[in-house]
Image 1 (cartoon, helix red, strand yellow):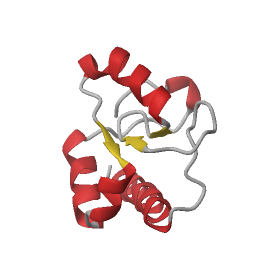
Image 2 (cartoon, helix red, strand yellow; image 1 turned 90 degrees about the vertical axis):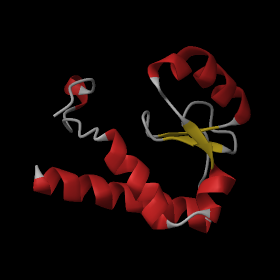
Image 3 (cartoon, one colour; image 1 turned 30 degrees about the vertical axis):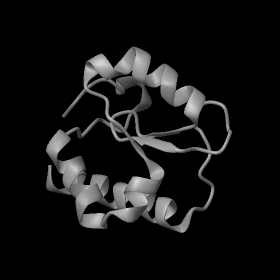
Image 4 (tube, one colour; image 1 turned 45 degrees about the horizontal axis):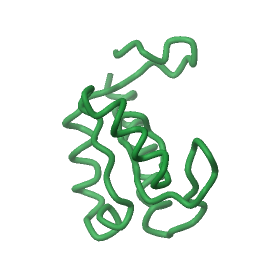
Length: 100
């Protein structure tokens, strides 16, 4: 579990660096410039995809945050939210919905 947590935190730090640097921030769905990040889906979203995301996934406690707000915060805050969710998933793509 410690190794999975460490790997998960490393991946999240990589995302945070990408957000802070503002490099290649495109919607994972339609490839338009992204404005939001969903920590549950681990996806960047443009405004149009964000609206669809909120309509369908907000009920499942998905909280997408504005990239600008994440950039203004600290890495510690970004990682704190990650730990709170406690979602360590199996890296096998066929087990995507299985939480460890």
